[in-house]
Length: 243
Length: 269
Image (cartoon, rainbow over all chains, first blue to last red; front, side, top):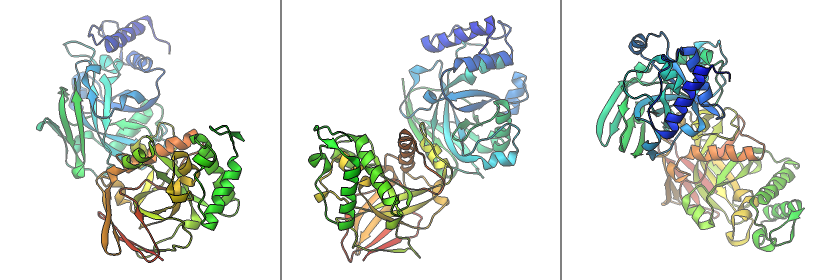
């Protein structure tokens, strides 16, 4: 991976922030790094670890408009990021979490694929919870910041019940018995289209990879407690968050 | 030839033949862990493999795999912390028709019946790193299954290497109809009852097998990878007993009931 000096600087700062859990990172903009450079930083951030899938961010049109882009963004998921309960929040920076669905691919999906082929490649859909780790203190990070920080990729929980389309209803996230946030499953968008876009963006997806589709709800601050994610057809994911 | 832990030579080929003779003659043998000092798990799998090769060379077909020791109770009993696996041999597959299967008592030594979930693999599943979500995604359909477990070791006096060498105590199996809908059930909470001659003798649920039956399938895919092999489309995987094993003798009639599935009746004839 060939990074410019500025990109290397950003990479070093993000890496140190994640390791030391201290938020003192220059913004990509200050270093003159755009979105392409940010994706290079992201790739370098996870280098050496096996990519087991991807996560989508900025899936809502209004969020994209706000950030001045016209497509979602993606981050890389590696092996160490898929957790089981209990989840230790101390390993994240300013942790937030959000309810999602994730696709596990049953077949390879080369770039340039059709929406129908993308649907056919879906092996299963699962409930998921996405834990976000934000390395910037205060202020609104730009798209380049978010991309460089692996779309705030911290960790994931995956449901254990296979779901398949059509999916209706909502994703409802509870914390200690209280409804924290919810969003309609439809807010995730057309899953086939998402996969087509992503396979193009990352030059192809592989069978077995997990694709976290982004949230139709609003991210919430993650604090210790019992969480429940309720989804379509009575599916549920229960986990314990610890400091 | 290789060293047994007791210093004796372990001849996998000869021990495979000895197990096969016990299988055919229904005369059990002494535990290999005692008579041969067999302690090594890899060596035990080697014996199992030799035995499978011996049988396939005579026309036996491998139609899938079985996973054993998936319950905490069984693991504690044998003092182990992971499951084991064996091969499903087609000569002991007893297809059910209209929800009924007849299993002859004749071929078995000391049989028990277990209620399980069977996975029909639809897409290649190769470890390492297979997750339960991937295992489910690669599954074409599921069925309820009755497995006959049996031991070629006298009095079921087994340690881990004994049962591994003995094809994970495989006896035979049958399944109910394959269901695609069952893929989308919460497999942890799928419950099962076994009736024997009119009385309920065992009950269980999906979570009893490694927390989730598909977790057992994922374990198998990863274990097979360490032997350079994988699960292939068409393979049947018996994912482990969901309740206790029930002794079976000639004349017993078993009815397996599982949530949302038609009953499966097994006549042990």
